[in-house]
Length: 457
Image (cartoon, rainbow, N blue to C red; front, top):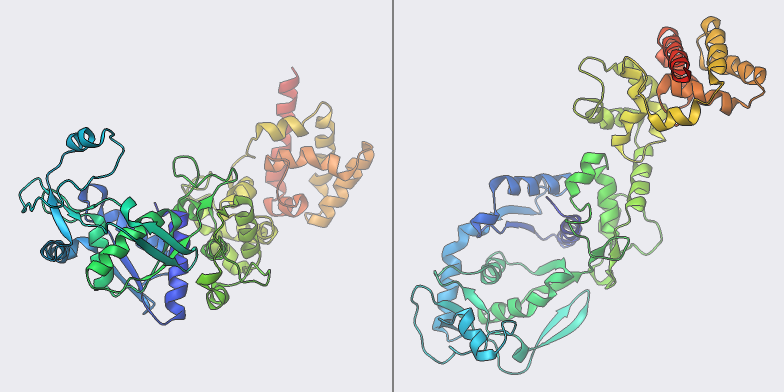
C-alpha cells in the first residue's frame, strides 16, 4: 500500500530534484526482514511510476536497498564508539523502571561512564549533549529548538550488534549525498537525533522540510484503519493518475494564482518548498472527484474509450465474456464522457447495453413503477414498434404518449427508462434506445409489463 501522504511527499521531492537538476533517491529501507517483502518494493515502484516518477527519467536513482549497506552501518556504529560518541549499555527495562520509578521515563544514562565493551546483549547508545539545544532550521516549519537534556541517549545498535534504523538512515543519507529531506511532519521529532548523528559522522546536515499532516473531513490525521489512504485504491476506482498528481501537489501548497487544475509541468515549475503551509491539509474526496471529472472531460474521445477499457472487462464488468460490443460502446461513449467522475462508474452507465436483460435496481423500480405505469409502457411500446428507429423519432413518439396521459415528458420517460436500462438515472434515453435496437428494447418493455402485472396480483 502506497499512502497518499507518501505520494504527496514523493511528488514534492521529485519536483525539487527536477528543478535543481539533482537526483530523486528511492531507498527501500528493508533492514527489518519481518516487515519487508520483495513484492512490497515492486508495489512502491508501480505506484511511483503511476505518478510519473520512474527510472525513465535520469533524475531518478534507485531503488537502493538499505540492507545492502549493512557493513557500512556496522562500521559507523563502531566509529562512533571509538570516538567516544557512543557507549555500550546492558540495562534492562525492568532495571530502568526500578531506578526511575516509572516505565514511561526515558533512559537515565546509567551506563555512560561504566566503560563497557561489546558483548552479546549489550546495546550501543548515542551520547547526546548534556546541555544546549539542537536547532532544526526547517524550510516549511521554521526554526525549531529541541533542548538536548530532554533527548535521551538513544540506541543506535541492538544487543546483537545490528544497527537500528535511525543510524542506518543517517549513514545512507550521507553515502548517497542527500541534500534535502522532505517528509511528513510526524518525523520532525526524529530530526534532532538524526542531525546529531550527521554531525557526529562529520557530515553537514541536510535541508529539512516537514510537510503538514493530511487530515480527513473530521480533521483527523488520515489513518489506514479508518480512511481510504492507498493510492492504489484510488487508481483502481478509476481516478486518472494525472488528476491524482494535480490534486496531491495542492495538499499544502498552491501556485498562488488560484488556478488549480493544470498539468504537472506547470506545477513543477511553480513549486516552492518555502511556500508550503504549516497548516494541516484536508484530503477532500469530493474535490478530488471534481478534479478527476475535469481531467476526464478533457480527454479526447479515443483516449476516453481507451481509458475506460479496463472497466469494461471481467472482473469489473457485470456481463459475461464475449458480451461486450466495441462498436456499440463507441456509440454511447460520447454520451458517458461528460457524466463520469471516475472511470469505474462507466459500468453502471453502459451495463444495460451488454446484459441479456435490463439490470434490476430495486430503488429505481420502486420509484418509477407506480400503479398505472403499465399503460404508459404499453403506449410507448406500441408507438415505438412502428416508429423510425432514431433518437428524434423515438422522442416524438414518447411525447405523444406523455400527452395522451396528461404527463410531462420526464414523467412518461421514467418508467420506460427503468424498463430498458434498469435505472432512473443514466445516459440520454432516446440515444441509448437507438443503440440498443428495436427488438431488445421492445422485449424489455414487454418484460417490465409482465413484471408489473405479476406484482399487482
